[in-house]
Length: 86
Image (cartoon, rainbow, N blue to C red; front, side, top):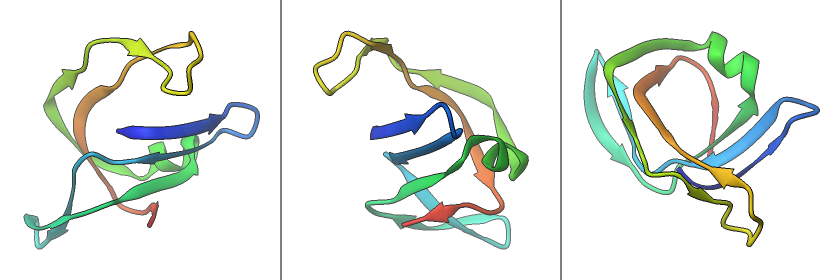
């Protein structure tokens, strides 16, 4: 992901996906550009309906806002049945 924010008190998040695809009839059909995803963490987790077996993790780094907060990203590719995408 690129950029993003989390409100831990409300459980909400927003981030820009590095890669996203439209899935039609079980096939990846169209790459999507400039996709951002937002929502409530627990609701999105309930809508995950597919995961790959492998996971890719990026090297850890620090928050891009100039703060010394350690961050990392990565994980399996996932399919989410319902999410707010913009």
